[in-house]
Image (cartoon, rainbow, N blue to C red; front, top):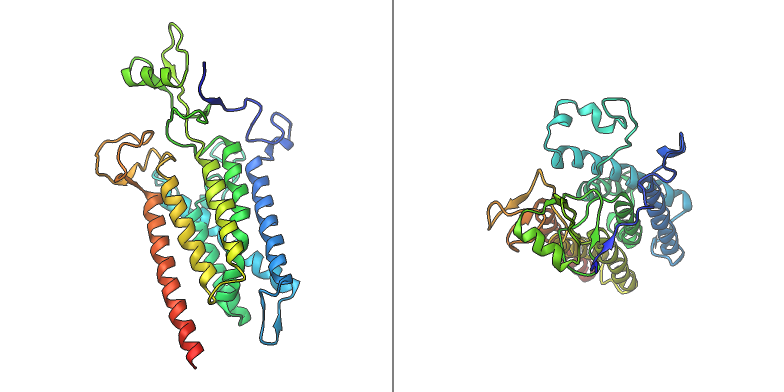
Length: 325
């Protein structure tokens, strides 16, 4: 008996697979629309609660839209640039940087801007928000606090898009909720541990079969739950009780870094990058051999946690000084 879940055969990256023109529409792109739409609606809700009312200023819908749009544009640029220059190991984009925003492959086939980095989007979005606030002479921390309260729930849709694309899946597992992703690496049944693993997962290996696809952690769904829904709920419940401006921004940075760091132990690192820090050298990426084997994403998450703690400390000290005056 199969003790795993087969990835649904009816799910395709395209919304209308095989249909001319409409076949270009992809679930991942649609999830971005849902993500941005959800975040904007939450931002409007915060404005209606007075989160961006201070002194004699009241945020208008035009201000809200221009702030949001600026942040999203910078986010997309940062996510794409970071992905192509940090995570791509072919060197193609360094040699031909104009291809970073070129949505076609060498054959002229439309691919969209495949490959986005969360951490690049985080940096880009942060710079965009700071740019807008400086230009409009608005308090940076207050606007950032509002934005990060809206972001996580929207982020949930991005990870659902990854799941619908059948990408960014996790390491192999015998857990009953493990999913057999069709595009995952297959393993030779002649390797003893592979056959043993398949037996534990209830996968039947037939005579003459050379390769087997093993169940994986649905790490995209773990991220959607913890980095999306749970993190949003924490920040949302704290929004009216924050002790100082900048608290929500710091909480988001620490919270995302914390959740993502641990989920990275279940998510398979990029095969061409492997581990940046190795306690066990030569360890496979598809299996968690050591907690001290650290991926690129985990290093960036540790930097986020450190940055969030520093931000929390600085904003707290700043608040005390302003209060004493």
